[in-house]
Image: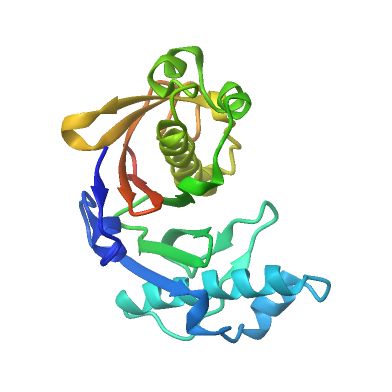
Length: 228
């Protein structure tokens, strides 16, 4: 695994991406960002304050990321399954951990999907959670009785994979629908699909998931290419 300073999470998120991406970061200490009216509608009037704050942080991070692609002033709606709805020709993902929100976006001509996930190590996933997250082959590597760092890495990597693939054709993937193998020399997981996610990403397709331990967080990123 790779342990790093969190001084430049955006640079870490860009690593290994074959084409340009936009990355945005927002911290709760930056203040509560304003929502676009269409985003207010997708959030709904009954959202509690905490939910409103974190939703706003995520949308602000996403707009910062879009600005790096030269796209400004657009609303980022919310799909029926909670996924962000990007402007035409754009794919991306948003993640939250503690008081931080991070987003990554790219052009659809380059990427079929992008995934990003950040998790706090202090979240402390349990051995019981390992049985829900891990396939039998993954359990030996995770070894949750020793510590939960590897389990958090695996959990975050699977979240990134599912965020990248779900929006392509709306196929829902569970934790058991991808099997991950860690490659220390690349600081990355090889994620092999155990279920077809799209026509271009059938069972046994493989995605690489870069994974870094950044101070007290785990950050994972992945991408799916068109027709890959």
